[in-house]
Amino acid sequence: MRKVWSKNRYLMAGLMLGVISMIAVGCATAPATFDPNVKGPQMIVEPSSLGLNVATVTGTAIVFKGKGFDPSDSVFIELLGVKKEGKEVKVPIAEADVGSNGEFAAKVETLVKVSELLRAQTGSNEKMETTIIVSQPTIDPGVYTAKAVSMNSKKTAECKWILEPPSFWGNFKDWIGESQGKIVKKQ
Amino acid sequence: MKKGLAMLYGCVVVLCLALAPVVMAEQRGVTDTEIRIGQYGPQTGPAALWGSVARGSGLLFDIINAEGGIHGRKITYFLRDDGYMPARTKAIVKELVEDKQVFAMASGVGTAPGMAVKKYLDTNQVPWVGPATGSSHWAFPPTKYLFADYPLYIDEASILVNYAVKTLGKKRIAIFYQNDDYGKEGVAGAEYALEKLGMKLVASVSVEPLDTDLSSHCMKLKEANPDMVLLWLLPKHGAIILGTAAKMGFSPQWMTTSTLSDTPIMFQITKGLYKGVIFTSFGELPDATTNPLMDKYKAAKDKFAPNERWGVFYTAGILFVEPMVEALKKAGRDLTADSFVKAMESIKDFQGIGPKLTFGPNQRQGSRASFLGRCGEGGKSEKLSDWLTSDVDLDVVLKKLGR
Image (cartoon, rainbow over all chains, first blue to last red; front, side, top):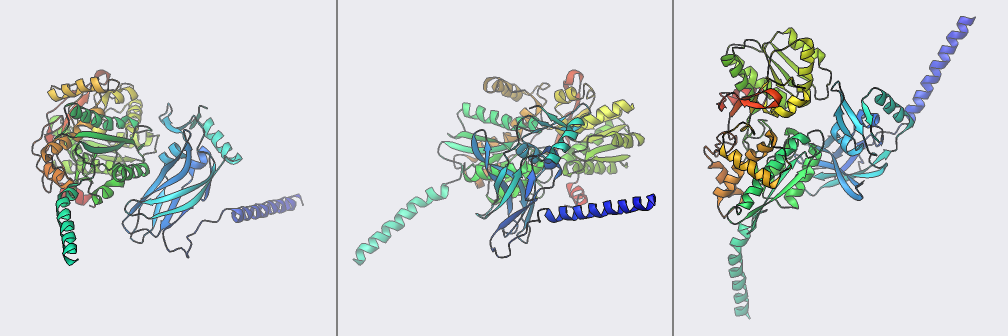
């Protein structure tokens, strides 16, 4: 009898986990898509929002995708209105060549994530492992405008990108990184 | 009335003809008194060590200006920090060309940053001299406005292999390389040289830029029992592999590219393990040369930039733009992008603080030579050879690389 009850309990737990997972997936932000009604250049970013924790930023693939540019052009993506040393500046964060179909996919490289989003530095520990050294606050959380700028024409495209304050789960992951000596906080 | 209109048209035509030479002679970045030159380079971030290249170029321009400029024009130099991030390089170069209106680009550290702007500079007819990497992408195939004078990684590897086998009598050669264009060009040069000698690499082990534990890599190398290992790596990986090998009791002759030729720094970060490492050099060693030009540059550094370290990458920044200054002189007062290109193409056996440089109408790689040095006690380097010219058939190697 006890055994049967135990089996049912596991089944229930499994079902509950499944339901929670489905809710979580359902609640997750749907990936952005291009607007078929726009004829000119346009851009989207995946993911459309990002928590500003070290582990989250460095562990997430951030890709700006664009279309409607001239074939064989190239672009760079800059974040507008970034506060830096008391001024508002533009910060280039990704670049790509435009394909023959006028589309591009610009990935944000690790060095950019560390330098421009986390405002941290890379270093090495005694084992010569790469470490992230945090000594100042990250870029301000907020809703930013990202702009794709063509190198060879006047074409541009914009999209919004949300940078969120560190989450509880993100902070927990950073705490693990810190305890392993891979994140060094000098604040 | 008709007569008046005819007179007016006549005046307009005469005025247009009179102004035509002025308009035609207008060249971006060149005025009566000024030539504007730009350079990007990492002044901050993990590659900042190489940022001294851009400041070294600035020293040469300071010297030229102090000597009165070139044909009555002073050089205005714009140095921008790209942090070794190609996205920033693109934004900087667009700003330098379209807002600052530079005439030409000087040097510039890094293959990825350079590749991000290569096409843009060519399309906009901006002369570019001396990108500070040994990639074959700059000069093969040749493009009109881009001139390279950093030795090719392919040539460096071949020169090292020939020296190891023919002079040092090494018989078992291995390579440890970064798994990208930089490392693969080192492998290609080594394989070519070995094939000509009737030999093969006994091991070829790659590393990813973000790898940090190199124990398994080192074990693979050790198992192949090489007596010489070529290193085509980031300085960080060079330090890790020497430390790991020392712990494993693995001590072949290490040889490496000019990228790891700042021996005082390498000696320091390897805690002395760099002693004995043989490297290729793109130019005279800062503290082991009898070249009088180096004495002149050192005196100027002490005057204009007394706080700068007199290191190999700082002097490299000078040598990479020496032919640019030579061409600005040769082009004369009538300086345009085209007259500059013609002047560059006329450079034959030019001797600065690097190898002799020769360019031509279809020749955009100024030299195929390097010399060898060895790291001594305290990181001091000594010269091991004179300039050695590569005999690599680039058509063969580039074809092998899928180009």
